[in-house]
Image (cartoon, rainbow, N blue to C red):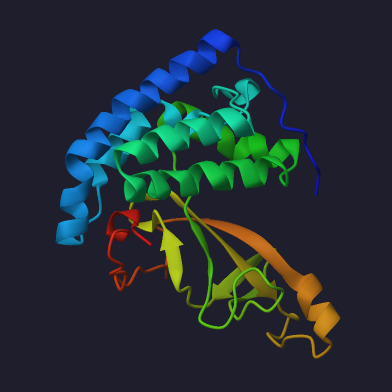
Length: 221
């Protein structure tokens, strides 16, 4: 794992433009977001506008085709979006948060594999880290069994914000021994918890719609 510093790449003019884009999108959130909470529906059209606006690449480094937004600029854009509709803003914030998270974790090679797709095609990441018993605690009950150089993952996540529109699901799981058993030693088990990513259309992946939280229905959690 590498640790990358979030460099400030955007000029003041570029930051101002990003804020303007966020304000324009916030108007759409304000006009349409409440309907989705009322109907308990996901705001697919608003998320599509988020993709089309380019904001999905807000905090993707410029070397991968993104806007190069730092933490403060990204946070300000989300604040502006939330002034339009908090739930819709929370949905797209999951993507931006995951991008920021993986900027600090992924090697240059892995960033090169996934980040250009965000900049060029608006690919979105969700975050599925909560379970009935635990979140990112070292006790993930979702397991990843080593198979032929990859992993076969089995588990159930409780919340996965933005999942209806995500191109990639990101989640945590505990890597088992090759025979599928978990380490008995707690410290060893905690050390086995790892972050994973898979395409949203991967075989065996399904979403069960159970989310019905007043004021937050549009998050698609």
